[in-house]
Image 1: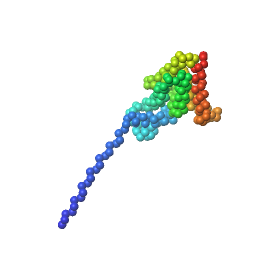
Image 2: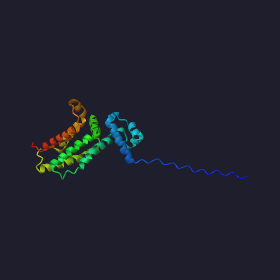
Image 3: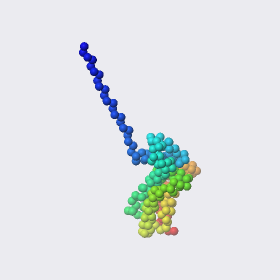
Length: 225
C-alpha cells in the first residue's frame, strides 16, 4: 500500500502586531483640546475627567500622569488658552505701520480673536468665578501675558514720540480698555441680544461694532487729555 501523504506542516502563527505607540505630545495636546471644551462647557466643578478620558480614548490614570490632578489639567487648559492669544499678539509685526494704523490693527485682532474663540471667553469667566486662584498660582501665565503689554508699551511710546498719540494712558490700562470692549460683546451677547434685540453675529452688525470699537480706541489716543 502506498503510505498516506504526510499532512502539510502548519504555518507559523503570525506574530502579534505591537500596539501603536502613542505620541506623548500629541496625546497631551488631544487631552488639552478636549479638556478645554469640557471645562468651558461645564466649569471646573462640573467637568468630569472620566468624560475627557473617554473622548480622548485614554484613561483617567494617563491624564493624571500628564497633569497630576483635575486642577492641574484645568490650569494647563488656562495656560494653553491664554497662550493662544498672547502668542499671536507678541509676534504681530506692528513696527512698520503708522502708530494709529498699528493700534487699529491690534484692536481689530483682539475683536476677531475674542469672537472666534468663545471657549476662551468662557474659561476667563469661569476663572473669575474662582477669583483667579489658578491664574495667580501660575508663573507661566504671568510670563505668557507680559509680552503683550510690552508690545503695546512700545507702540504707545512710538506714537507719543511721533506726536500722533496725545493722551497719556498706561499700557496695562489701555489693554484693559481694549479687552473690555471686545470681551463684553461676546460674554454678554445672549443677555444683551435678548434685552435689546441685537444679534452680534449678523455680518453688518459685526462690522459696524468692529469699526466702532477700533475708532473709539484710536480716537481716544489721538485726543489730548
